[in-house]
Image (cartoon, rainbow, N blue to C red):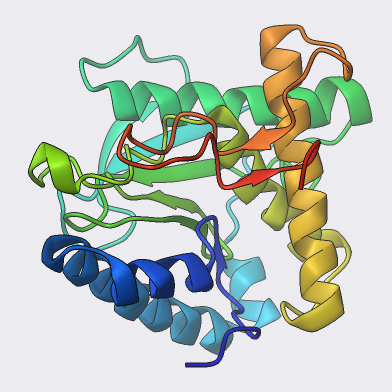
Length: 244
């Protein structure tokens, strides 16, 4: 399996899933393989989406923060059922609220600090879908919206490696920043430009978390994916920008 050219913007890198598929328990291997297959399908869809189609799909509504959260109900259809829109009170589902709050914190950073109106600088709606598939160990930006899996919550406790992917605000900021890069830099998602793409998302994902926690750069942990791993994993996050 090619390990360098992955155009879809997923938070969990393929090499990590491949390692789980090779070395995990039977249940963990099955989950990793299913996630790799789904991510491969999404890569194909994203490659097929031209810039023109992406522009048509963007829904600018006159500017300002405009969040929409959908529930895929463990299915594959995107965006799914609308469950919370801008100004609605919190839902009873924590993943819905985390997606809503995280996308809002990301919007606020770009608007308040960089005077950028949303991802495309033109008031693009921030669409998020939670509960994508069942046992989906990833989150991604597909060129139009954010999509979050629930991790391993349906597995026996000893087999769980990932918590829900809305749990880490830096993941939300990271993935939405892929949208900013998409509209501004148009970096090809492979090799050196792909690494620059990821690095930009890591930096701004960490900045979103720092601002939400009111931390300085010195106080920040610079960890991407804090809280994502269960106690079964010997690690604090996917990457550390302080101690790579």
